[in-house]
Image (cartoon, rainbow over all chains, first blue to last red; front, side, top):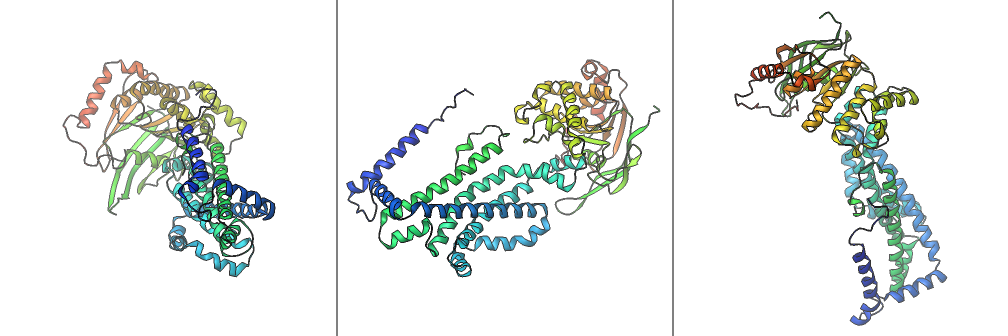
Length: 263
Length: 269
């Protein structure tokens, strides 16, 4: 390993592709004769972003959505992890509960959004709840699978040292499950945005999801684009935060080439 | 030899249900005793229940019939007198080498400075002092197995149960590790039951060798290895009498008659 971190091959091409994309966005619609209300050019979207900054409280809406995403992600992951560990440690509980958890997973959770609005009104809570429901499952499944696949010889090793059930969990099972937990959290970080936006679509007058539908109602396509870009940024930052935390926590693993892979 | 018995199996039988739910007898009526500071090797075909015996000795399985005794007390569960080591090093990847060595003492609740000092001494003894703060993936297979041996010794067991501890490392490393083990066992006066497939390993490391039959596993032969230098398997290896013992074991196991065991690696032993 050299002292200076070298960028992996392909980084240049990736950046070039980004520039090409921006250029195509700016000049492509004009050249192809696509009207502004279908695809506004990059500069029009940028102008709209400035206008929204000045007049539409876009920062406040972004803040509300970010807060909901964060709350949904943290609560949903926590719930998923706790239930995953409990089910992983108790096979009878898993057998008893898995049909219901599976039913909950199969039910399209975004369809619950109107129901939650009915229950909780036009507040931030129904949005958070939709995110919690969506985030819960991937985290739980990853944790459960990880606990199930811990090498039984490792458990026996701890048992041979007379470890208690709690010691086996904290010294063997929990640390062994961390890589899978983070795989679940990566998925969760992007799904949390989906859950919150759907909640905002359905009701209320706050958040980027609201701005998006508002822009749609006014046929303000640039506004829709600005909202989409900001939502993407929120999801990207959340994902990046998980990946950076993962790299710090899993520092003991051999260096992998897969770290940059989207997963 | 008039020495105290450290580990004893008295008429031990073990039955399992196999995948199809049928009863399978892994071990049938095994009795054997290992004296203080004695090293006994156990050889036999795959799937003959050698690992089952080891797990019974470690208190991980309860036998269907019979009893295992350690230091004269019946084994009723995992106990502090026994420690085991497997072919897999079972080092925890998230712990440094020294933290891995301390695992047993940590579970036993020994104070941190004390267990760290003990672990450091063991690592020094195995030439791993400078790797104490490394993570397992940064070590070679041989070093990892040394660390596993250090972890086994760190809880100061009176009996070591070793299940093919060196079968996953290359031949040269294996000879070095066999030397480590033999010296350590002799110096610390530890009692050991060594399961192995390697007949030369059995003859060079052990005081006595037991041969087990195919499933259901029974003891079919007991052989005392009457050779000097049990603490130096490399020196023993040069002794031509080793070949005679190995030849007798080959005959007893019917190696050379061309038949492969029907059970294969079913129970991994």
